[in-house]
Length: 94
Image 1 (tube, rainbow, N blue to C red):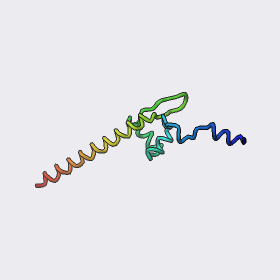
Image 2: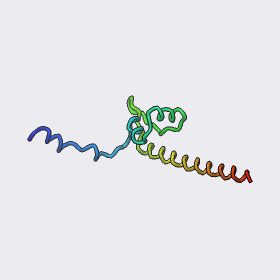
Image 3: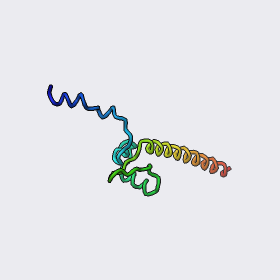
Image 4: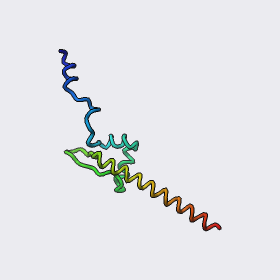
């Protein structure tokens, strides 16, 4: 049997391995943000929770999910505030 066939049979395809964490680059790709934006959010203490493993920084999937849910909540809250402010402005004109 050719060696490549043996390797294919004994290897688990990457797509079947459940992801437990992202690298910073993978996280940025998944969230469609630039690395510069990631580090700016981190500087503002608005980035996801990180774990340091050896010399690497990883973002656990649970932390990425939590961060995204928080951002969606922030967006909804900001939209509600904006809507409230618009109502106040139109009310004051009368």
